[in-house]
Image (cartoon, rainbow, N blue to C red):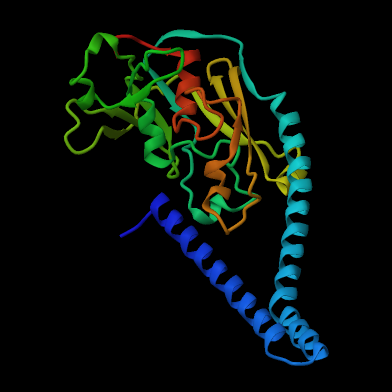
Length: 304
């Protein structure tokens, strides 16, 4: 019946009600201890017993909570300083841009992940945790972009949805994507027109692969960063004809919850990331950060 914010509010009210009932119960016991015994010594003994049984344990719990909170604050301060230092080296380096690119080559596909990965400080792709994975990663390179109407990037749509909007305002994706897959072969993916059940078609490539390749790597030069839940990721664009890196972009992410299982917002998916998203956000990056970087370097042919 209740979920999300409503459930949280209900839970808060219930806990507050229980707390007040507990306070009322202890107050009633203290009143009874001070009222009914005739002798002053008895009053003090019984009141002390109530405090010892019902109040002192709560005070000890609160002190422990405070100690944990202070420890977390100190750890957070240290980790945040490390994250801020790493962010100074984050961002893109574009050495060359290419116009009218029809297709790209993916040397690897963003691996799929699970909840266990999102709480793992050693998760290999935690530097860019919100990136779409698997088939969605491939698909992102053929989708069209509907502009947001602001300097920030818009959002991606398939060719079927593209027909519903003013096509002149859409920004095209690539006409095809070549992918090196686990069986050792290269497959070419193309958008289906219209995309009835699948957005892309797939066929084994027998001809020449796309010239420009996209790859990614987790940053492992600072392994101690992971102890502070700071992770980095770099995406590379390479001209395979010259074996030359023509652009690269690095992101860093920081999980301020340090993987705590007590709240969902501790997941890597809710981490702070720099630089800010193509959508202008530091948290909740666009799931298409790689595509939005690549198409600024390898500019899709307008007729795609």
